[in-house]
Every structure is written in structure tokens, then in C-alpha cells.
Length: 183
Image (cartoon, rainbow, N blue to C red; front, side, top):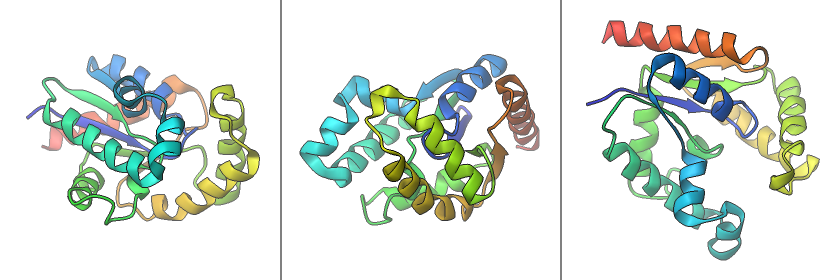
């Protein structure tokens, strides 16, 4: 089985940006789950409007399972912002998938700060700069405040994603190479 490095964290944490650099450094394939979702299912917001957040989450879990099943080369996978915080009963396979990702030695949680208030401020600013999101400061702050404790409770490596992208990617690369050497 080919190794997969998972990048998890809230929207605006840098998973896609750092993940692309990290994949190049490792000479691995880069997969952004949100981009795959857009290609396969269309706009996430439109799908949520039609099927609710639970319908989106179930499709996202299935998409991840399908992608994971077809891994044919080493891969860096940036997961969707809420992926690790879905309710455990959202889909039958989800608890096992979530546990597998959390316990994997190559899973990295990215946050711009490890304290709630600075993390919230940075995430809100980043998300509001994305014109395609149609986000409000209040909704983004509520989302990160809700997810932050659940993300911090995960038993995986944490990386601060505020700073030079190359330096952060290099740090995660060392972490991944060390995990591969121990395997």
C-alpha cells in the first residue's frame, strides 16, 4: 500500500497551499479533497442548499473512501475543513475512516495558531479574503470556535501554519520522512 499524508484543519489553515508545496518536495501526488468534490459533484454550497450539510458530508466521506481505495502512488491529501469534525453517526464507515486518519503517523493538523483567539482572528481574515466563499465574519468565527476544541482533541501532530510556506512544508516533510523511516 502506498503512503498517504493527510493534512487536516479548518478552512484557511493553509492545507491546500502547503500541501501542494509539500507534495512537490516529496515528489508525491497532491490531492485536494475540496477540488475533487467540485469536479465530481459541483459547487459545495449548492449541494448543501439542495441536500443539507449531512448530505454533503456523506458524499464527501464516500469521495474520500473512493480516492483512498484507488491510491496508486504516494499522496498528500488535503481534507475538507470539517472532515474530522463530522458527527460520528453521519455515515456507517465514518468512525473507522476518521480513526484511521487520526491514528496515521503521517497525519498533520494545520492551524495558524494553537490558541483559540489568535487562530480565530487569522482564519476569519483568511476566509474573508476568499471572494468565492460568500462568508461572513460571524459565520466563520462561529465555525472555527465550534471546531477548534474538536481539532485540538485529535491525537495527531500539530503544525502552526502561519509563516513562510516553504519552511512549514519543510517541517512537515521532515515529520513525514521520519514516520516513513520508523515504518
